[in-house]
Image: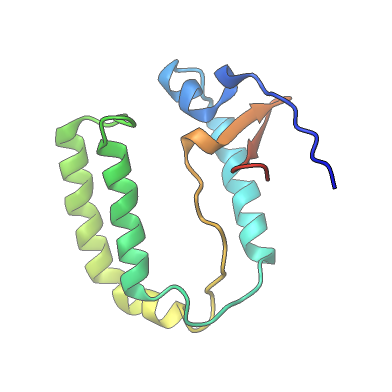
Length: 130
């Protein structure tokens, strides 16, 4: 087998679009629709995403927003988001626990601003050579 790779314009990475103020609500909406469609068609796998794992992933996402490399959110706002998130996690844990028995999908789950690029006006998630 052979892999043919094409380069894309790195200024169209979602990270660069956010940093330069060029990301549009339509870009985010298109990515959300595409992601939801993908999730709806993914295979159901019980017992993978427990309520504790969902909480861990949510915390990791906020930590990434506050990292030196990806700092896109003011520290005070990040603290406020963390407090709101912890309250929501506490409130929603029973729902997460119930859904893990019927809605869990085993997916890669590494969707972030550095692995989505806008090509021909549409978001294209990627990771590695996928």
